[in-house]
Image 1 (cartoon, rainbow, N blue to C red):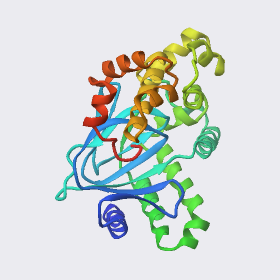
Image 2 (cartoon, rainbow, N blue to C red):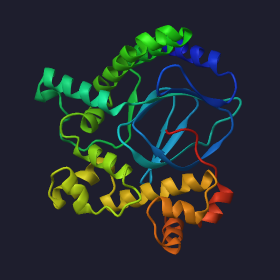
Image 3 (tube, rainbow, N blue to C red):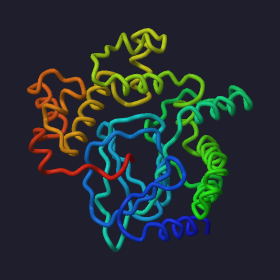
Length: 296
């Protein structure tokens, strides 16, 4: 019943296709009624809950399709392709995106680990970089309680931070909790490295720079990074740069401007690597593709 109530709340506020920000910081509602092919995007730490339809995300060639039975947790910034190829008027993609505030997630994850002890920390096994989790009672009720605040701006301002914390807690306890704790709890070196990379994307950052940033040896860092993201550090940096460039081109920047903005000093090298990854030159791609909706 709670899930039906959530859908009703979204339907009330978004009867037509689009994306809207809400009075709750970082919370967006979306409705898509036409197919959106998967295209380059950069996910920020986010949770995406679908109430109808199917959304797709591709990370390093691995497809993730999810609908109303599972929510998606992206615990760190990742270069992906995303879209909603099946969306239609009869079967719209309807859902909510919630940006995860890293400092609050870290504080809550560490507090939970400290209180519960070492047994609550991630188990050390490889966890997916993008995690799908079944809607459990804790997550569903926390999301409903959060969205119910949209009826009253004062409630949203006063109670919103507490309801977001409740939702974060449900995420950390839920089926994707281990992936979340790996990114935000004790031992979150890879997530911190990705934060560092995201703010230095136009610079020539080496593997040694990344390893030194989190106090690891090059070999250990390389292994841990690939376990966390499925990509080597160099592959990850290249994907981040090319995805960011593709998004800039879609927004109207020239190929040369986009390449320069993400650290390429040679347009020809950029075009070669872009075509190798996406199968089209940057100019061909800009005419044939549209950016995916939203960050997830």
